[in-house]
Image 1: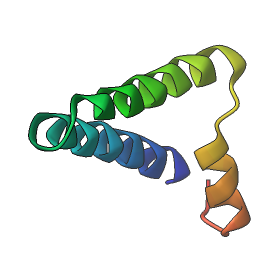
Image 2: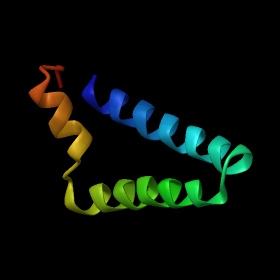
Image 3: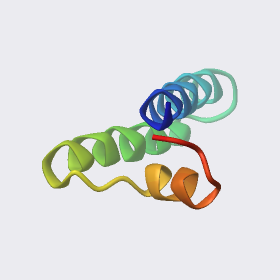
Image 4: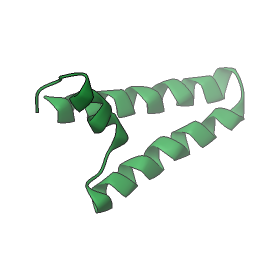
Length: 61
């Protein structure tokens, strides 16, 4: 369950930042890059901040 929420949040962040970069300012693409870098980092280290936050909130594995 927690993994699905992490993917949904990451995907939402990417889509929202892409929309903001089109309609507001291109600097929102830095946020897209940040989310992508965190996804890449978590694939190597098996550590994800969002997963830890969800764990502390009591979301089941």
